[in-house]
Structure formats: structure tokens, C-alpha cells
Amino acid sequence: MSISFSIGKKDKKTRARAGIVKTPHGSFQTPAFVTVGTLATVRALSSQDLLDLGVEVALANTYHLHFRPGEEVVKKMGGLHKFMNFNKPLFTDSGGFQAFSLGFGMEHGTGKIGGFFPDEGFTKPQPEKKWAHVDDNGVHFKNPITGDKVHLTPQLSMKIQHDLGADMILAFDECTSPLHDYDYTKKALERTNKWEKECVLYHKKSKSKQALIGITQGGVFKDLREESTKIVNELGFEGFAIGGNLGDKSKTQMHDVLDWTIPLLDRGKFVHLLGIGVVEDIFNSVERGIDTFDCVTPTRLARHGYLFLTPKAGGSRENKYRMSIKNKENKESKKPIDSSCSCSTCKTYSRAYLRHLFLANELTYFRLASIHNLHFFLELMRNIRNSINDGKFLRLKKEWVGN
Ligand SMILES: [Zn+2]
Image (cartoon, rainbow, N blue to C red; front, side):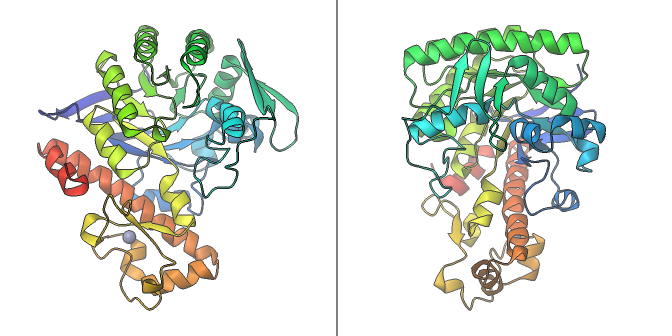
């Protein structure tokens, strides 16, 4: 075992728990928000900014790094930690999600690359074009930079992730679209089961010291989720991730999937939920037993002018805990974004100044806004951990999201 997970405190009324994951590059406390640094950087921020903010763990994307700068370059530079000079626990994902997103995202108008967020470009479905196709050995797609053909397989995903050198690496799976039906999802799960076994074999042979994390899939179908969980449990992974674009589904479906899956997993290992960044979803997932999350939400929304607010500063479910810096009421506002926030942006700058920087498209805005939004999520997780340790998790949840 290259990492260890110990549970410090379990909530008496829910499946929430507070713990610590130890890795060769230090430890992080759970529940944790895993900051996303797609290209070995959190956009607009330096590694020192991340340390100053108290980021304990981050995730880089295999798909993007494979194309730019290429895993060989990262390996020659001593691996991701040295390359980005960030000596803290790191995850990489399998690269599959982005490759599949190219396929179903472009076909259905969903998926991260095909416009996961409505304000991010492509949202129009293009079913006439096949952007990626799957066979039993992996996924075929085109290199988005050069146009060359790529065949991403479980073995290639493992090889890239070994070269990148993160502490925790993800098994290669087929991430299905929320729009796939039962028959397709079942077929995809059969491939995922086969691929995860191949990842385990390849990883064992390589003698890599990285922790391999298994992924459960199965869409929104109870029997498929149960089957996936059973298989993943048996493969000897060091932690688990729950996949399947759940952030895109209705809340009830997401809760159902978590309720079917988590009680069946080996609870001595940590469980990661992929791609969740909505405040209510974080509370609801922690309540159901999730230990870690990752999402680009804080920095992506910062760049689009949305700044997060705690309930004290007017954040609520209705306004999604955020405001637009563009709002006219900020034009001459001397207030910080959030008076109760202790981040360096709120301690130093007014809303009026940030609004001016945003409207002038000044680069400084991106840094200052990203600092605040990331601080918001890190602080939220700190409060959640404290509430679990103090036996007050449901009370904190009520303060934030009501009943
Ligand atoms: Zn702030």
C-alpha cells in the first residue's frame, strides 16, 4: 500500500466521516475538495498561491498533459510534483473522461468538452459527427492539437499516469453519458470491468508505487451500479471513485446512485466523487459518505465573473451562493466580495475595483477572483470537517442549505 486512509470521526446520524489520507507527498484531511490543475497549473494561480491558500491536494488531467507537454517531458523533469514545484498529494485522472466527452458530448450537446457548462461554448448537439468511437480495447479519437489519430487504452492510460507520477492514479473506464440507455450502459460497464482488470495487471507488473484508484460506473441503473461496486471491491484498489457525470443528473438520481454504491464499498478506503462543485451537492454527498471531490467550478466561474458568497454575505440556494461582479450595484461598492471572508482578495480590494478589472479584462482580475473562489471552497470543506468532528454536521448543513 502506498497511501493510507484513517477515519478520525464518524457522524452518528449520517454516513459522513472525517479522516486523513497519507501519501508519499504528505497528507490531506477529508472530506476534501481536490483543486483541479488541468495542465499542471490551476489557471491564473502559482503553486505558491496554492500553498498560501492551504490547498492540501490537487488533480491534473492526463488527457491534456498527454498532448501538452507530453508525459515524457514531465517524466524527464522529475514528475508532476517537481515539474510544477508542488510537493503535496496529487491525483491524475485516466484521460478517458475527456476522450469520451468528445464523443457523447459533441453528439448530445453535453459533457465537459462539448459544453458541460452552458456558458462555455459548444452546446449545440452535433449528432451527425462522430468525434470518438469506442471498441473493446479503448477509445479512438483525434489529437485535438495535431489532428493525429489516438487510441487510448487501459495500458496507455496507466503508462501515461506512471510517467506523470501523481500519488493517486485512476483506473481507465468508460464514462457513459446521462443520456445513454440501459443496454448501452450495460455494454459500457462490461468494457469498464475488463479495462479495470487490465489496469490492475499492468500496474502490478510495472511495480509502480502509486496508489491505483478504482472507478464504479453503471449509470443510473441499480443492478449495474451494484455489479460494478462488487467487481471494483474485489480488485484490490487503494481507494474508489464514483463516476458517471453525476453532477449532470437530477439530484434524486445522484442521491440514489450514492445510496446504492457507498454502503457496498469497502469503507476502510476513501471514496472520491468525480466532478462535483455545487454547494448543496457537496453537503449531500458528504452526508452519504463521500470523502473527496474535484471540480473546476471555483476557478472557472471566477473567470466568468461569478464570485461565491457564504450565507452570512447573502449566499443561498436561490442564488447558487454566488453573485456576478458585473452587477451594477457593485459599481461603486467599497465592500469586499464577502465581509466574512479572510482571503487576501477580500482583505485588500473592493467590489468596485474587482468589477472594474473584470470589465477591463485585466489579467489581475483572474488571479484575485480565483483566490477568493478557491478560498471559499477550501473554507467550506474546513467547516464541514470541523462540524463532523464536533458532531454538528447536520446543523451546519441546515445553516447552509436548509432542510
Ligand atoms: Zn474572499
